[in-house]
View (cartoon, rainbow, N blue to C red):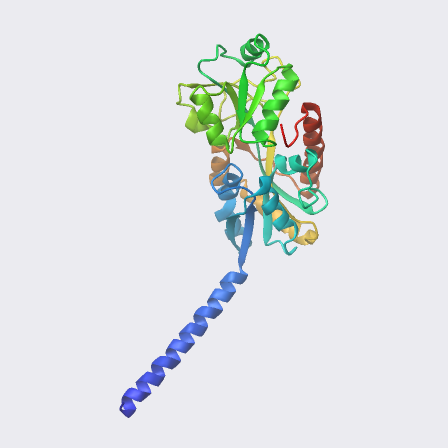
Length: 327
């Protein structure tokens, strides 16, 4: 090898080394700038949708690269427990909902305390649920369905996304409030539960308004009621169950972000302010509305009150309906 070739070889090695060092430094900086929203269920589910709706704007607002990571298992306990033990630096948050309290309310020990080990940081939106029946059921309203079900005690059934899921809790609460004797059939997910009602292998199902649009054109299904206190802007022609004779009935779910309990209050306030600003964004509002979500701006104190009140409500519903892990 000539001196010139040797010089070029050493120069190339030096440049390659510098380039490699630069890339490694950039990667390290990038990795240090990554924050995570943990979804404790399988990817693509209803719990992930609100996180996706704010992800881009949250990254822009905070200067952090927010990614969404699914950690499913044990009815949400795996991912939830993971966040409870994460560093309290505001870079690992849990995408939670009202069902956050159900596992412990049913008497299980989910490896974490759903209240003491978390700090409610921000409410993204509130969502209601819709009652759907197979088109073969002779009921065009919730009142007619109640009357029909009462004429056939123990004969009709309803599907859910699994024991302890919000779809199970909502329908069990509806049946209890209306004094119905109707059989629960648990599935592994909402899609499967709805598919079998559509196919006539189930009579009824209650599902979140998120994604309900895909069922609107299915003539084998009929939406006959919504569980919110007032009618939804997404489905303005669907009466509430309260309008249908169950005057005190209401079942909704908040979707929000929780941080490990030891997260400094200053970090919590910063995240809360960022989320409250983001949900006023026109594009974000439209994304959330498409999910059937309305987004009240709640400060830390207000969201904590909602969080604790919902703990009490979910516990009461589980107790009143008699739901257990074997239901």
